[in-house]
Length: 99
Image (tube, rainbow, N blue to C red; front, side, top):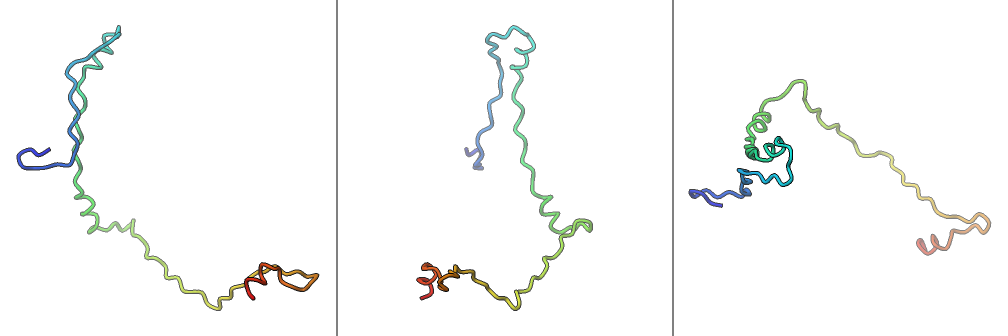
């Protein structure tokens, strides 16, 4: 909706209940309970606190710098293959892969 030239992408506010239809309500308190208006829509909080917290640092809540991790040294990749001890050969699957 656009009111006075200002457009909003928010859904409209829920309607306020002005009357109650107490069908089968024998208790007078339950009829009174239903006739109350709905609560108002809460206002959106500004993000001033987020911006403010970016410039103010908490001494007790400092984030530690990430540790520097070096690359591996003397790396050796070991491959496990199938080997038939009786025949002294590799399995057919491994033979096809490497030959």
